[in-house]
Length: 497
Image 1 (tube, one colour):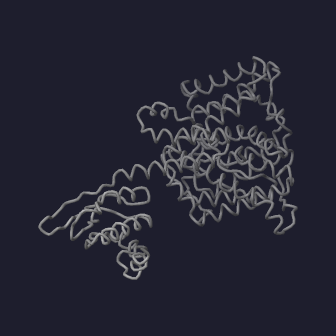
Image 2 (image 1 turned 60 degrees about the horizontal axis):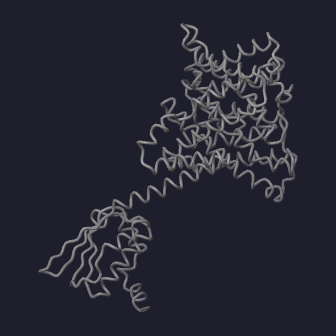
Image 3 (image 1 turned 180 degrees about the horizontal axis):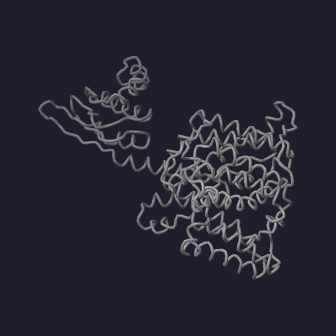
């Protein structure tokens, strides 16, 4: 079932997928080389990884049209491992990363994406857009005016070409940009950086490589501290990217299948001499904007990448970096959620804080996992605080029967339990107290402890206490953890005072 895809995913958009895949393949080359350099390995490692991961996820991934390859976020995590132990240990760590992601998929950890709020996703997207733009700055500093002119010209082609009649809609403008700027650079023999200057392109197809490391506990101790963060970051970036592509295409995807697919792809990459990777938001946006929608676009991107770097390396190496910088600037502009700036005035301050905190942490640390963790943590705290405000207690005195009835409304949990206790007047001289929970829900042990405390305090003051109206879930947690209706437990508490 994992290897079966709908016919629509493969053949529903052949022309769009092929053209989009070609654009993505061209944009992947310099990035794969750059990420290899970041990780401290040969450019072949990043290029083989990008080919392998893209092709495998085309078949087994959970999100059609999403591009996965070697990424900067993953490359940053493997720098120390490569420096201290070498490439073979990186390949072993890549295999372990893949295994951990497959396990996560079977444990259905992809479903945890439902805990990531909209403001965290927006912050994640904005941070990635900023990082993508910042990654282009080295190509735009200490260069001649030709580079700026080419970059500006490339952006002009990307944004204006679609307005041309007939042809404007039939070809992806990023592909036209790359072809035109390469032609201009070759015709005028411009002295500007090209893809070939990034590093030597491989001239052979990848071969099966089992990592040359001893299969011992010592090896596991070396690679596990790198594999676990890589597995987490890889899943986070892949699942967030899948969520964004879902929104761009107005479709849904299987997040748990995506975890398994990324795991299989990383195992494949490790066995073919590649580094670990994950979904790429930039390339995925290029694919969608260029008309790619199906699994075919991902397969074409990976296949074209390998064909071009191995068999057309002479031509590919002549592509000016300015052309690819133009495409990536287009991606950063298209990725950034500009509406989030307008919404700063309209949205609650808590939502804005979560979004801005996610952006700041991701950009500051260059670690997507840290940013998402901080965003989710803040969103959870704000949510808990907000929900606690909707809890209140009404009371009514029946003087004839000397009975005070407290009607509790709302959610009682760790953040509202203090407010719950404060609502009772324990010093009031009444014979009976009724605590009505028909419109309340108790969520955790803290809330159950608060109920116990209220009942016991009233009893100490000599009042008869009756708790009524518990729903099934509340009754279950109170029966299990509460002590106010268990004489032997009460005896321990009362006897201790």
